[in-house]
Length: 343
Image (cartoon, rainbow, N blue to C red):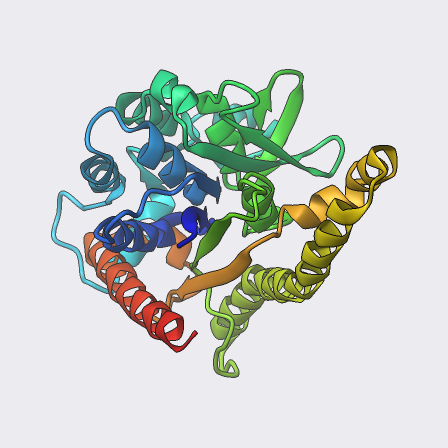
């Protein structure tokens, strides 16, 4: 029986990230589940760092952190108002700027210094960087216009890297890492799938499983109001590229079978220099990363969310999303096991 290597891919989506906590809780109940790779962007980067670098128990740490992210009012407010309270600030995440005299030069609406304190409170970055689990987060380089990948096996991750991944404009400010300035990596790619694939072991003796947590549903109803138009645009933008990535990965699996056959033939050729030259080709090496990539499990948020949902940190919605993540992960795992039995 082949050994299994798991990768967990966490999307960005602000308050929707509570859904990922529910998914993680259910996955951790699976016997033997221990991701070798965790990638994340924006809120997914925060969850990824807390999962692997938690100062205490990972799941309890995630829940404690999200308890601090939850926004409540000191006064009774109508339930219809609660989802909008965090637009005025979140004491554990971001706060309204107070330097109003400098507003012509603002490049963001909020100050995210509270988030830095939370990251340092709950995440042991030394533990994160020494972990055998590979953690990669993405951020958009403002100067180059490209997505940069930071990971704990090639550099030391810091709060700056995590905050850079979640610096969504114009709400949140740019984050400086070294000499470069960054915005939220989700602006270009809200699903760090390729960074996960590239960090998996290329050995053909391993069975690879990818668990992708989708915070934005691909399918939806035609809009009837302007708010619904914005909502559906947001869903399609963030969900669309993932669908293409998954389709590409599945098509590449067809080429992987060819790579297996090429390997077999190369082993029969008594010409080390020629076989070494072929195996040194960049395209050959890249395809080898996809070897045994046969199982991609998407755990998708099935609950309806409004356009301001990423800013809805109300207790009711945070708890609902965690339960929904657990529920949808349960369904996805059951489906996965059924398909494995058929195979």
